[in-house]
Amino acid sequence: MKTFFWQRLAFCLLWALGLAAPARGQAPGIALGKTELAPGMPFTITVSAPEDFGAAPAFPDIAGMQRAGTSSSSSTTIVNGQVSSTYSITQRYVARAEGKFTLKPFGMKVNGKVYKSPGATIVVSKNNRPDDDPANAYDPLEEFFGRRRDAGYRENKENAFLALETTKTQVWVGEGFTLHLSLYVAEDNRADMDFYDLTNQLTAITKQIKPANCWEESFGITNIEPRSVTVNGKPYKEYRIWESAFYPLNAKPIRFGALRLQMIKYDLASDPFFGGLDRQQSFISFASKPLAIQVKELPPSPYSRALPVGDFKLVERIGKGRVETGQSVSYQFVVKGEGNIAAIEMPTPPTQPQLDIYPPTTQQNILRDAGRVTGSKTFTYLLQPRQAGRYKLRQVGFTFPFFNPRTGRYDSLQSEITLTAFGNAAAGNTPADEGDYLSNTLLYLDANEGLKLLGNVALLALALATGGAMLWRRRR
Image (cartoon, rainbow, N blue to C red; front, top):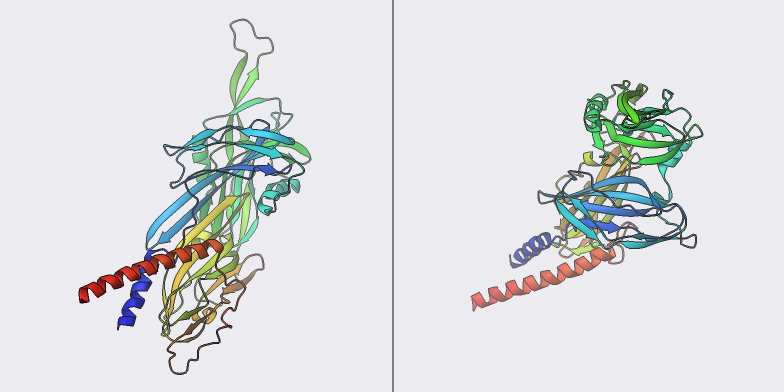
């Protein structure tokens, strides 16, 4: 009875100390990227806040560097029903040439709060090592526009066109595709134009675009900045004004009609006189071509329920692979990849008579960038074996079935970890050898997690010692 009391007390303290789900959210504020860059590598400024951005944050200009687009991300953590979120926007800058560039100290106002940064000196040199991160070294949009053949536009004397474009024209039910609406203006365009009442126009346009049978992940464009692209071998400036990813809920075809954007055009006077107007304002309308997305039914499923659709992989972490019966251990089941991350549901192993599995805490990270929605969803469980033996977590029920649109087949992510429990073994169970409990290369504990674990163990020992002392005094 005493042993059971102390085991339960240890479990509760471990849970309260947050051993089950260490938070990894970005702290609110401004974070600067790497400052020693090779030519072509982007320098980044990221601003993070605990609430979604009510207005677009104003990023600073850097002399000698040009803006190269933004990306947004969000992180959500659920612990014991309590939800906490972090929202981030990243601005990228690319240097026009090698050299040193100064980012002066600056501040950014986000949701009424001002975050400050001391600035930095950015060095761009061919002697610097290129970034090993493929997300920085490779821009999917460059390839996308580099292999364009026909953007589907109407040529006009203003030498500009409006285009609604998609990353995919054929998808499976549940497979994501990204739409974006952009105005392309030729580099040699001579017409003087400006946006007109864009907020209200976009409200009306998005109502026309959004399909009723799709789940949406908005990219939340807050700043419209020109981006240099090449269309049919000619240089253009792309002004991307709207972007979202969609996930079809059924096989109904998705069709988009022509969209119209009204712009202000200024006609310059050929011979302005004193006191007269040097330009006259008029309106011009641009129209995109209709677009259609074909949606295919999923093949018959071997499962009795609807499955997530995406290209996923599994990462596992466990505090330790060998525990004494009655002790608890933290286990993380991480699904990561490209797809509808928000729709991923936690694995629900059936009740085990020999192994207690406590409901997990959940952490979700979503990145919307370069026309893709990627991220991860982490489920952190506490496992507590009741009897000695070897517990293959795959057989316990830690699996994640899904449909992979890349291969066109159903697949399943399955745990490769085996948990070994020793102690007072029940009949028919034999504890495994001590050296045979690590069954998977994915079985690991990060260095940071190890430090947290040591700190939590120390706090737990202190709490147990204090509780024991109090009980001893009462009995005296």
